[in-house]
Amino acid sequence: MVTDLVTFKNVDNLNKKVNKMFDGLDNNKYKSEAQHQSAIVKWFWNRFKDYRGLLYHNFNNPRNAVNGAQLIALGLMKGNPDLTLAVPRGGFGALYIELKKPGEKPRPEQLKQMDRLENAGNKVSWSDNAEEAAEIIVNYLNLEV
Image 1 (cartoon, rainbow, N blue to C red):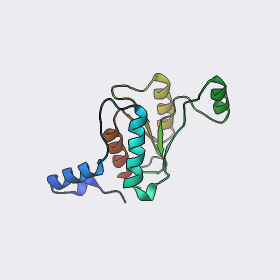
Image 2: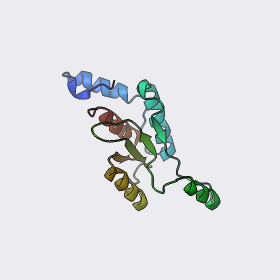
Image 3: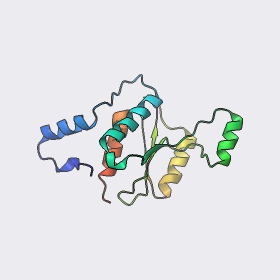
Image 4: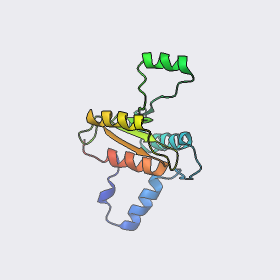
């Protein structure tokens, strides 16, 4: 079960727990989106063993126009967020996270798809750094079942 960060009474202990929870997540601003995503997936795999396989990448980058047409025929959705955490919490069906390169924001088609997913009953967030994305995941997992 995920540790409920709110229950810690000692602030020093809380800070130590939070720092340990995010070990390995370096928010170097020169990292690419792919490097941030890889760090998040590895961090999640190591911290939440009971949920392994439930945080996954949504492939959304066809190699060329022909491959794009093939993927659309298979259900590819333009603008779909990068990661899905397929665990219901707090009345949401799943968590979707769009990861961006540091300093970047989601494109209009991504915002449109994020709104559609949210309107369908999911929690949707975006982040431009690994530590913030990890915090989004921890906060989501701490919602009531």
